[in-house]
Image 1: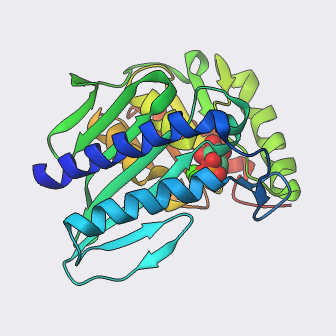
Image 2: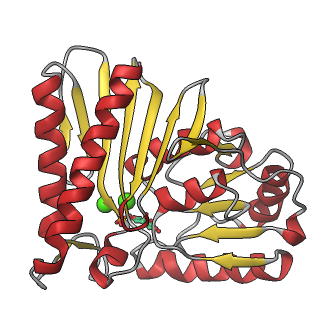
Length: 262
Ligand code: IPD
Ligand code: CA
Ligand code: CA
Protein backbone atom coordinates (compact mmCIF):
# COMPACT_ATOMS: atom_id res chain seq x y z
CA UNK A 1 0.00 0.00 0.00
CA UNK A 2 2.81 2.45 0.82
CA UNK A 3 4.27 1.73 -2.61
CA UNK A 4 0.98 2.75 -4.25
CA UNK A 5 0.77 5.90 -2.13
CA UNK A 6 4.37 6.80 -2.98
CA UNK A 7 3.64 6.45 -6.70
CA UNK A 8 0.51 8.61 -6.33
CA UNK A 9 2.55 11.28 -4.53
CA UNK A 10 5.34 11.24 -7.09
CA UNK A 11 2.92 11.48 -10.01
CA UNK A 12 0.81 14.22 -8.36
CA UNK A 13 3.96 16.24 -7.72
CA UNK A 14 5.23 15.79 -11.27
CA UNK A 15 1.87 16.79 -12.81
CA UNK A 16 1.67 19.79 -10.45
CA UNK A 17 5.14 20.98 -11.41
CA UNK A 18 4.29 20.65 -15.11
CA UNK A 19 1.06 22.64 -14.65
CA UNK A 20 2.80 25.41 -12.73
CA UNK A 21 5.53 25.67 -15.37
CA UNK A 22 3.18 25.59 -18.36
CA UNK A 23 0.36 27.79 -17.02
CA UNK A 24 1.96 31.16 -17.93
CA UNK A 25 2.22 30.14 -21.60
CA UNK A 26 -1.22 28.51 -21.69
CA UNK A 27 -3.29 29.46 -24.69
CA UNK A 28 -6.33 31.54 -23.75
CA UNK A 29 -8.54 29.27 -25.82
CA UNK A 30 -10.52 26.84 -23.77
CA UNK A 31 -13.12 24.27 -24.73
CA UNK A 32 -16.41 23.86 -22.93
CA UNK A 33 -18.08 20.66 -21.75
CA UNK A 34 -21.52 20.34 -20.09
CA UNK A 35 -22.31 24.10 -20.19
CA UNK A 36 -20.61 27.33 -21.38
CA UNK A 37 -19.10 27.76 -17.89
CA UNK A 38 -17.79 24.16 -17.66
CA UNK A 39 -14.33 24.61 -19.15
CA UNK A 40 -11.45 22.31 -19.96
CA UNK A 41 -8.02 23.60 -20.89
CA UNK A 42 -5.31 21.88 -22.91
CA UNK A 43 -3.43 21.56 -19.62
CA UNK A 44 -6.23 19.51 -17.99
CA UNK A 45 -5.69 17.01 -20.80
CA UNK A 46 -1.88 17.23 -20.67
CA UNK A 47 -1.93 16.67 -16.91
CA UNK A 48 -4.12 13.58 -17.25
CA UNK A 49 -1.96 12.21 -20.08
CA UNK A 50 1.17 12.61 -17.96
CA UNK A 51 -0.49 10.94 -14.95
CA UNK A 52 -1.78 8.03 -17.05
CA UNK A 53 1.60 7.52 -18.73
CA UNK A 54 3.50 7.44 -15.42
CA UNK A 55 1.04 5.07 -13.72
CA UNK A 56 0.87 2.65 -16.65
CA UNK A 57 4.67 2.67 -17.06
CA UNK A 58 5.02 1.57 -13.43
CA UNK A 59 1.90 -0.63 -13.23
CA UNK A 60 0.72 -1.71 -16.69
CA UNK A 61 -2.10 -3.97 -15.43
CA UNK A 62 -3.91 -1.34 -13.34
CA UNK A 63 -7.21 0.36 -14.23
CA UNK A 64 -7.53 4.13 -14.46
CA UNK A 65 -10.63 6.33 -14.23
CA UNK A 66 -9.85 9.92 -15.21
CA UNK A 67 -12.13 12.91 -15.69
CA UNK A 68 -10.80 13.74 -19.13
CA UNK A 69 -9.86 10.28 -20.43
CA UNK A 70 -12.58 8.00 -19.08
CA UNK A 71 -12.10 4.40 -18.03
CA UNK A 72 -9.03 2.30 -18.88
CA UNK A 73 -9.53 -1.40 -18.07
CA UNK A 74 -6.96 -3.54 -16.26
CA UNK A 75 -6.59 -6.88 -14.50
CA UNK A 76 -4.68 -6.18 -11.26
CA UNK A 77 -7.61 -5.16 -9.00
CA UNK A 78 -5.99 -1.73 -8.53
CA UNK A 79 -7.77 1.33 -9.94
CA UNK A 80 -6.51 4.92 -9.99
CA UNK A 81 -9.10 7.70 -9.84
CA UNK A 82 -7.75 10.94 -11.28
CA UNK A 83 -8.86 14.56 -11.48
CA UNK A 84 -5.97 16.14 -13.40
CA UNK A 85 -6.99 19.66 -12.30
CA UNK A 86 -9.74 20.09 -9.73
CA UNK A 87 -10.66 23.76 -9.79
CA UNK A 88 -10.06 24.47 -13.47
CA UNK A 89 -11.82 27.85 -13.31
CA UNK A 90 -9.45 28.92 -10.50
CA UNK A 91 -6.52 27.62 -12.57
CA UNK A 92 -7.70 29.68 -15.53
CA UNK A 93 -8.03 32.87 -13.49
CA UNK A 94 -4.84 32.45 -11.45
CA UNK A 95 -6.60 31.80 -8.14
CA UNK A 96 -4.79 29.51 -5.71
CA UNK A 97 -7.36 26.79 -4.99
CA UNK A 98 -6.72 24.14 -7.61
CA UNK A 99 -5.29 20.71 -7.18
CA UNK A 100 -4.15 17.48 -8.79
CA UNK A 101 -6.15 14.68 -7.18
CA UNK A 102 -5.24 10.99 -7.30
CA UNK A 103 -6.90 8.18 -5.36
CA UNK A 104 -5.96 4.50 -5.34
CA UNK A 105 -8.58 1.76 -4.99
CA UNK A 106 -7.81 -1.88 -4.27
CA UNK A 107 -10.69 -4.24 -5.04
CA UNK A 108 -13.10 -1.28 -5.07
CA UNK A 109 -12.00 0.29 -1.79
CA UNK A 110 -10.06 3.56 -1.65
CA UNK A 111 -6.84 2.85 0.25
CA UNK A 112 -4.80 5.96 -0.50
CA UNK A 113 -5.44 9.54 -1.57
CA UNK A 114 -3.18 12.39 -2.64
CA UNK A 115 -4.30 15.97 -3.28
CA UNK A 116 -1.58 18.34 -4.45
CA UNK A 117 -2.77 21.94 -4.00
CA UNK A 118 -0.04 23.17 -6.26
CA UNK A 119 -0.02 27.00 -5.85
CA UNK A 120 -0.02 26.61 -2.06
CA UNK A 121 2.77 23.98 -2.10
CA UNK A 122 0.51 21.77 0.00
CA UNK A 123 0.46 18.02 -0.43
CA UNK A 124 -2.42 16.32 1.39
CA UNK A 125 -2.09 12.56 1.74
CA UNK A 126 -4.08 9.81 3.42
CA UNK A 127 -3.85 6.06 3.89
CA UNK A 128 -6.84 3.97 4.89
CA UNK A 129 -6.77 3.29 8.63
CA UNK A 130 -3.46 5.11 9.08
CA UNK A 131 -4.28 8.82 9.02
CA UNK A 132 -4.13 11.98 6.94
CA UNK A 133 -1.28 14.44 6.60
CA UNK A 134 -0.48 17.87 5.20
CA UNK A 135 3.15 18.07 4.08
CA UNK A 136 3.87 15.28 6.57
CA UNK A 137 2.01 16.77 9.58
CA UNK A 138 -0.91 14.77 10.95
CA UNK A 139 -4.38 16.28 10.36
CA UNK A 140 -7.38 16.35 12.68
CA UNK A 141 -10.61 18.07 11.68
CA UNK A 142 -12.34 20.56 14.00
CA UNK A 143 -14.60 18.91 16.61
CA UNK A 144 -17.56 20.01 18.70
CA UNK A 145 -18.45 23.00 16.54
CA UNK A 146 -22.19 23.75 16.75
CA UNK A 147 -24.00 24.43 13.50
CA UNK A 148 -24.51 28.12 14.22
CA UNK A 149 -20.73 28.58 14.60
CA UNK A 150 -19.74 26.44 11.62
CA UNK A 151 -17.85 27.82 8.65
CA UNK A 152 -19.32 25.85 5.76
CA UNK A 153 -17.77 25.37 2.33
CA UNK A 154 -19.90 24.55 -0.66
CA UNK A 155 -19.85 24.69 -4.43
CA UNK A 156 -22.15 25.11 -7.40
CA UNK A 157 -22.61 23.01 -10.51
CA UNK A 158 -22.32 24.12 -14.10
CA UNK A 159 -25.99 23.92 -15.18
CA UNK A 160 -28.16 27.05 -14.79
CA UNK A 161 -31.19 25.16 -13.47
CA UNK A 162 -29.13 23.34 -10.86
CA UNK A 163 -27.48 26.59 -9.79
CA UNK A 164 -30.86 28.25 -9.21
CA UNK A 165 -31.77 25.49 -6.72
CA UNK A 166 -28.30 25.59 -5.15
CA UNK A 167 -28.84 29.33 -4.62
CA UNK A 168 -32.14 28.65 -2.81
CA UNK A 169 -30.52 26.02 -0.62
CA UNK A 170 -27.52 28.16 0.30
CA UNK A 171 -29.85 31.08 1.09
CA UNK A 172 -31.56 28.87 3.67
CA UNK A 173 -28.25 27.61 5.09
CA UNK A 174 -26.53 31.01 5.39
CA UNK A 175 -28.60 32.46 8.28
CA UNK A 176 -28.07 29.25 10.28
CA UNK A 177 -24.24 29.07 10.19
CA UNK A 178 -21.19 31.29 10.84
CA UNK A 179 -20.61 31.87 7.13
CA UNK A 180 -20.25 30.23 3.75
CA UNK A 181 -17.12 29.77 1.60
CA UNK A 182 -17.03 28.92 -2.10
CA UNK A 183 -13.42 27.97 -2.79
CA UNK A 184 -13.82 26.52 -6.29
CA UNK A 185 -12.23 23.10 -5.80
CA UNK A 186 -14.12 20.24 -4.18
CA UNK A 187 -10.88 18.36 -3.41
CA UNK A 188 -9.36 21.43 -1.73
CA UNK A 189 -12.60 22.07 0.20
CA UNK A 190 -12.57 18.53 1.63
CA UNK A 191 -8.89 18.88 2.54
CA UNK A 192 -9.83 22.17 4.25
CA UNK A 193 -12.28 20.24 6.44
CA UNK A 194 -9.43 17.86 7.31
CA UNK A 195 -7.11 20.78 8.13
CA UNK A 196 -9.68 22.67 10.24
CA UNK A 197 -9.81 25.58 7.80
CA UNK A 198 -13.54 25.10 7.46
CA UNK A 199 -15.83 23.11 9.72
CA UNK A 200 -18.05 21.49 7.10
CA UNK A 201 -18.66 21.05 3.38
CA UNK A 202 -21.64 20.07 1.26
CA UNK A 203 -22.24 20.07 -2.47
CA UNK A 204 -24.67 18.67 -5.02
CA UNK A 205 -23.35 17.24 -8.28
CA UNK A 206 -19.73 16.43 -7.56
CA UNK A 207 -18.20 13.45 -9.34
CA UNK A 208 -16.24 10.53 -7.95
CA UNK A 209 -12.91 11.91 -9.19
CA UNK A 210 -13.59 15.19 -7.32
CA UNK A 211 -13.91 13.55 -3.90
CA UNK A 212 -12.23 10.12 -4.12
CA UNK A 213 -8.82 11.19 -2.77
CA UNK A 214 -9.87 14.15 -0.62
CA UNK A 215 -12.75 12.19 0.89
CA UNK A 216 -10.21 9.75 2.35
CA UNK A 217 -8.12 12.69 3.61
CA UNK A 218 -11.21 14.09 5.37
CA UNK A 219 -12.30 10.71 6.76
CA UNK A 220 -8.81 9.95 8.07
CA UNK A 221 -8.77 13.36 9.82
CA UNK A 222 -11.81 12.22 11.81
CA UNK A 223 -14.58 13.72 9.68
CA UNK A 224 -17.67 11.88 8.54
CA UNK A 225 -18.36 11.97 4.80
CA UNK A 226 -21.61 10.77 3.31
CA UNK A 227 -24.86 11.58 1.59
CA UNK A 228 -28.41 12.10 2.76
CA UNK A 229 -30.32 9.35 4.63
CA UNK A 230 -27.27 7.27 5.56
CA UNK A 231 -25.92 6.96 2.02
CA UNK A 232 -22.21 7.14 1.27
CA UNK A 233 -20.72 10.15 -0.54
CA UNK A 234 -22.37 10.43 -3.94
CA UNK A 235 -23.11 12.69 -6.89
CA UNK A 236 -26.59 13.64 -5.67
CA UNK A 237 -25.29 15.27 -2.49
CA UNK A 238 -22.19 14.87 -0.39
CA UNK A 239 -21.67 16.32 3.07
CA UNK A 240 -18.59 16.26 5.27
CA UNK A 241 -17.98 17.42 8.86
CA UNK A 242 -17.00 16.03 12.25
CA UNK A 243 -19.61 13.67 13.74
CA UNK A 244 -22.27 15.77 15.45
CA UNK A 245 -21.99 18.69 13.06
CA UNK A 246 -22.48 16.25 10.18
CA UNK A 247 -25.88 15.24 11.58
CA UNK A 248 -26.89 18.86 12.30
CA UNK A 249 -26.02 19.91 8.74
CA UNK A 250 -27.78 16.82 7.36
CA UNK A 251 -30.96 17.72 9.25
CA UNK A 252 -30.80 21.32 8.03
CA UNK A 253 -30.31 20.28 4.40
CA UNK A 254 -32.67 17.31 4.17
CA UNK A 255 -36.00 19.24 4.31
CA UNK A 256 -34.67 21.70 1.70
CA UNK A 257 -34.68 18.83 -0.81
CA UNK A 258 -31.21 19.77 -2.09
CA UNK A 259 -31.03 16.87 -4.59
CA UNK A 260 -33.60 18.41 -6.93
CA UNK A 261 -32.70 20.37 -10.07
CA UNK A 262 -35.82 22.54 -10.36
C1 IPD B 1 -15.25 21.34 -10.04
C2 IPD B 1 -14.74 21.90 -8.73
C3 IPD B 1 -15.77 22.81 -8.11
C4 IPD B 1 -17.09 22.12 -7.91
C5 IPD B 1 -17.59 21.49 -9.21
C6 IPD B 1 -16.50 20.58 -9.81
P1 IPD B 1 -13.46 20.87 -12.02
O1 IPD B 1 -14.29 20.48 -10.63
O2 IPD B 1 -14.45 20.85 -7.83
O3 IPD B 1 -15.37 23.27 -6.83
O4 IPD B 1 -18.02 23.05 -7.45
O5 IPD B 1 -18.73 20.73 -8.89
O6 IPD B 1 -16.97 20.06 -11.02
O7 IPD B 1 -14.48 20.99 -13.10
O8 IPD B 1 -12.73 22.12 -11.74
O9 IPD B 1 -12.57 19.67 -12.17
CA1 CA C 1 -13.14 18.30 -10.43
CA1 CA D 1 -11.12 18.58 -13.39
